[in-house]
Amino acid sequence: MSRPMSRPMNSGDREVSTIRVSGLRVRHRRTVALDAVDLDLGVGVHGLLGPNGAGKTSLIRMLATVARPDAGRVEILGEDVGEPARRGAVRARLGYLPQEFGHYPGFTVREFVAYVAWLKEMPVAGTAAAVERAVERVGLGDRIDAKLRTLSGGMVRRVGIAQAVVNDPDVLLLDEPTAGLDPEQRVELRALLRELGSTSTVIVSTHLVEDVAAACTEVTLLDEGRVAYRGTPESLGALGEAPGVGDSVIERGYTAALRAHRTGLEATR
Amino acid sequence: MSAPRPAVGLLLYARSRAVPGTLTALAGTAVLALGAAARTGSGADPGRLLPVVALAPLLAAAVTGAGLRSATEELDRTAVRPWWPRRLGLLLGPTALAAVLLPLAVLGDGPAVLRNLLGCTGLVAASAVLVGARLSWLPAGGWVGAVCLASDGVHGRAVALWGWPAQPGDVPASWVAAGGAFALGTALYAVRGARPEGPRG
Image 1 (cartoon, chains in turn red, purple):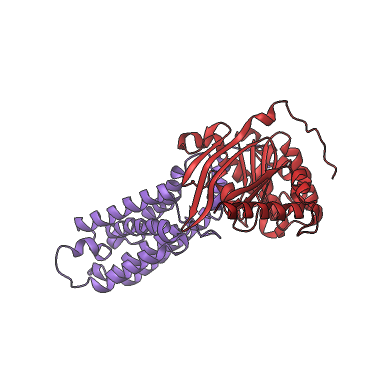
Image 2 (cartoon, chains in turn orange, cyan; image 1 turned 60 degrees about the vertical axis):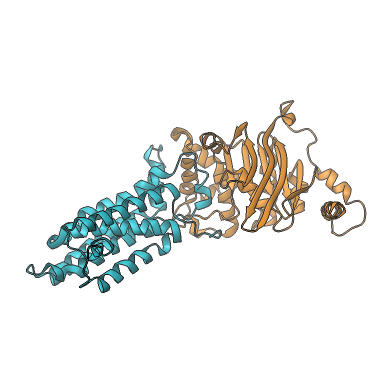
């Protein structure tokens, strides 16, 4: 795996957490989506892995301030987002790609991204340039004035990424950004993630462990609403050196970490 | 695109909620009401206008209610500013247009039309919060339909309250009921917004 060992980053960035989550608990009707989750995340690209229903989307939605936890505290960029008065300032510096983001088929790419820029209260003077830059970054510059209804699924997904980065967010939350992208587009997205992760806190939820291996600096593995493993792609890969289930080292690491977490839970029951 | 103006965001918001279509449909409703009133009203018997007086405001409120839908609910929740002023604008703007056009179209019974518009809009707004914008017309439609069928010949003071859609325009209690529904529905919608109807239903 060829990844730059030293990332362009101010010294001390690692110690400063941009996101602090403590005692986070979320329930959906009767099921517990997140249970006593504590996380400190700083600048870099953080991969969020886990089986379906592990709580990845719930965690991202809490961090995006679109849903409120039942218990616990979420602090983003030093602000407690539980306080409505503080939330606005955080949201202006946040980028969010929901799993299903919905869109207006009659809007052009430019108009849709500008709509989100307006939601984020971006200064009017810089919006047009920021919109073009964001669309350029996801490789849709030549389709900027195309209506969304004329775009393919993968292109719409990239429009979703463009709207998430339009305000150059300090915290970028992407829920399944690679879903629907072809291999070439995924490679480009990973490069974009690495670039963004040099200055911002990027959190990427994904099913694809190879995305994590290629683009992430840290990995958090969720299982049944709890943090099952935290480490780097390298340390997760090291777990996979031993024979196990999976076709690649990191896939084996993923299953090994899950299994270790589950047997650990069994033992304490 | 030329240099952006401050109104660009608001215009995009209006287009995203299909406001141009809503306003056109409201104008169409007024034309329809005008035609219907001209054919049914004899002047001597205002009661014969009842179908127009009850249905035109209901149709207008239904059109407004359909426009309360958001396709980007999840992204909208990340808006920096509170939503209530924009929601109020989205609800009250079209309602104001209808409030000007409809009483003009049904000159025979203008006050009753205005009262019914307020009442129906309130019901529709509250329904958008509770069941979603797509079916927000349904409870109001059911109420108005039931009242028109059932309130004829009912005696007592309560009928002026619950039967407001079918009352003459000069019954104070019917204005209290319709005005109350309007205030309640508007406030509820401004605070809560339409119920999400996306994949997260």
